[in-house]
Image (cartoon, rainbow over all chains, first blue to last red; front, top):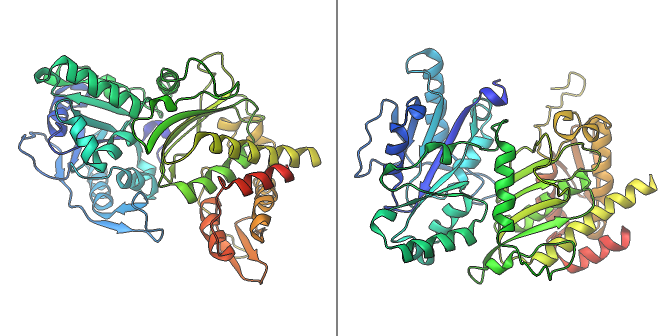
Length: 354
Length: 108
């Protein structure tokens, strides 16, 4: 099995119909750093891609027993990725060092992410890098209001590439930027119009890059804190982020827990929460102060899928409390906080009794 | 697979800390995998009691979940526990239910 550092990074490129996914991919592939990238695409669009390692996917899915969309295996993707890898190993194709998967404009990226985490062969040779969502500055707001697929793509993204800003007025660009910042405060926004951007801004500092992951976690937290209620009226232990309520249903907030968390109790709590409310917990990202662990533990997940935890060598700032950023639909922050605290108390009571 | 009992080794789950000293330091080193499982069973049972269910470890590789009528199911990890618990209890297991939170606070 390949070690974490030698696994091939995978970037999922998602975005609504006509939002500029293929154009972004073309710009990325032109950069020397990405010349050695294999590309899987769902459809050949109007923008031609001239790349050595380009293959097409057919959208075939296998719905697992749970029946939810995010836990769906994309069988076409499994076949394509396994086939690519074996041809790479046999020397039939060049030894690519990165894989980019472009989704269709209406695709939910969660099953793609799930496939890379769940398939036993693929997950031993590939690792997920940043998921990038393209958003069209001109039509982005309209897509967000009218298409749930567009909303989901943005919530799942680790980076947002804002396209077509060169043909859009500044007011409109500012409006879409503000909306995106409220929707997914932890995803940095990069303007990519005309190819005038640094690919590193989209690809680097993912959570599996040992040298840069602290930077990524710091970015999550600062993105969340930028929206925090400056009055702190929610009480001394929690930050309010629901001032960024962008609709009646989806909102982001940060739960802060003062006392060290018992990892076993946290696992029981989060699995129970995701079983019942996974459809509505769109993202969870956090840095935890785990009881007896010397360094902070980092968790992140999309709906029911939680990535294996990782750690940072040191705290990204002076704050040693557990901070978890949630993007949820129809869930209440205060209830979530009370529930986490109650479960953690259970473990504390058990430890004292023992 | 275990040569004695023929049990297939369970897949790692993100909730497993035992042995992960790189991530959890002493929290991973101070407990064996079995101790961690037993602790998980103990904490799980405090919650499952609210639904009339009882969890026990099975051979260090799976868990057995029972209801009061004696129905039992084998589950392999925490993610699989909750849908099975809901099926055996015949009701939703919701950690955000105010009654459940109140019950946890009482037993904590």
